[in-house]
Picture 1 (cartoon, one colour):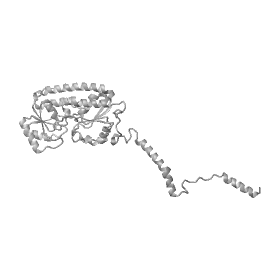
Picture 2 (cartoon, one colour):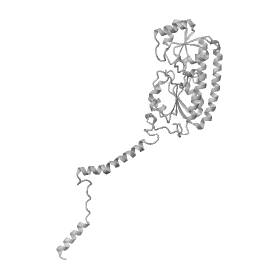
Picture 3 (spheres, helix red, strand yellow):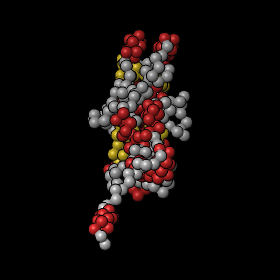
Picture 4 (spheres, helix red, strand yellow):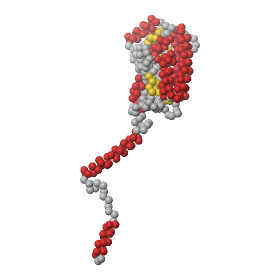
Amino acid sequence: MNARGKDVLDLTKKQMNTEIPKPVPGANQHPRTRSLVFLTWGLPVLLLTGITIWFLLHGGEGSFWHSPANGLSRAPNPEEKLNSSEPGGPIEVVSTIFPLSDIAKNIGGDKVSVMTLIPPGANPHTYEISPTQAILVAKASLLIRVGAGLDDFVDKIMSSISSRETIILRLTDGVDLVDGDPHIWLDPVIVKERIVPAITGALCRIAPEDAAYFRKNQFLYQERLDALHREIQRLLSNLEGRPLISVHSAWRYFCLRYGLKGIYIEEFPGKEPSPRWISTVVDLAKRSGAQAIFVEPQFSAKMAETIAQELGVEVYEADPIGKEGVPGFNTYIDLMKHNVEVFRKALGENRDL
């Protein structure tokens, strides 16, 4: 081979051993071709990746999507235990008013943790729930409310409560209300026969393994309510037929149970009575020989004081809701005893309890 041929052969070998540059994807492709490739391969990959990320963030239990605070929850599974509380921890219970909280504590004992929405002195008819309270309600296993217009503020957050996680117990459901009055808890007999069994049933549904414990506490508490009822009957036996005039109609069931004549200044809860109605109440009070007018700490006493001045009687405070942590007001039974003492003093009976 001549020198020139040898040089050509060497050059060919060098070219064969040189790495051929890789083409840049799409560099020589028409724009329409690149779009077709993306639609064929890139878009499905992106969609699959997005779905996977969404599921990881939103699809699991306890995620935002299943959070009761958003009102978006999957359908309830009847096989699941109805308890959103921490495993092994107490059942989270929320009630709208303190007497219901105390009743729930007596039944639930150390198996429950109870919170009251309405603070002492607040009017349940006009109360506005706070965002923090709304979150606590959404996390609770049991919400106990009165219903029948007393605690309608709860309705504003009902859409945020998951039916799978929260049992909502409306105590006036199925009760024959008198003139639509919701204050059924002020009759100890109704508490014993309707309210206590309803709360016990709800707790047993949430934690069936503790049903025997709840039933035992129910029985013991009902015995105490029986004793309270008998004691009130004895203490008010000499006051039968006496007029009990109050600004608010809270004591209707109490008066019916114990033979008092209830006269109410307020025509409707939370609504200012008309001058004509006030005049009617004053005339009725005079004819019935009223000895006192009763106000509640949740309402202004101004109207009662004006009417009492005209009648020449005193104003007394009777509390239908109570005050947690205040002696004489911090249990349902103590609260009822305190109110009975107030009624006896105002209406003419001064024997000590």
